[in-house]
Image (cartoon, rainbow, N blue to C red; front, side, top):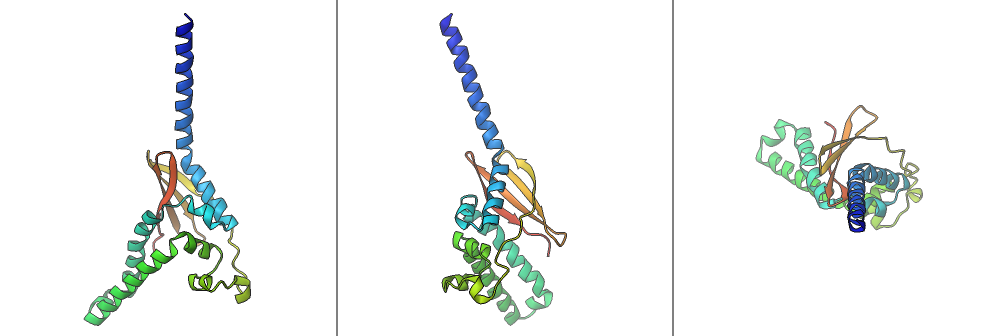
Length: 184
C-alpha cells in the first residue's frame, strides 16, 4: 500500500514538473521579448545579444535590404551593363553592412546612437554633439505563435508600418532569428 502511494506521489510530481517545463517553454517568447525590450531601453548590447541568433538574423535581413536597393534603383538601373554592375556592387555592400551591423558590437553601436566607424574611434556621442543617443521607449509588441517552435512579435512604428520580429525555439530557449521589415 505504501509503495502504491509512493508511486502515485512520484507520478504527480513528474506530471507537475512536466507541466511546469511546458509552461516555462510556452512563456519563452514573452520572456524573450521582455528581455529584448529591457536591453534596448537600457542600451545593454550584451544582454540583447543573449536573445539574438545573429547568423539567422543576418540571413533574414540580407535579401530584404538587397531587394530594397534593387527596388529603389528601379528598372532603368538594370538596363545597361555598367548600371547592372553598379547595382550588384551596391547589393554586395548592403550585405556587408548587414554583416557588420548585426553583431553584438554593431547592435551596441546602434543602441548607443553611434555609427560603427565612430565606435572604432571610441568617440562618445556627446563629443560629436549628438544628443539623440538615448533610445526612446520600445513599443509593446503583439505576440502570436506561428508554430510550437516559432512565434512572431509585431511592433507598430510611428509611420504606420509594422516590424515583425520572429523568435524561434531551440530546446527551451527562444531567440530573435528573423526580422521582417515593413514595406518600403
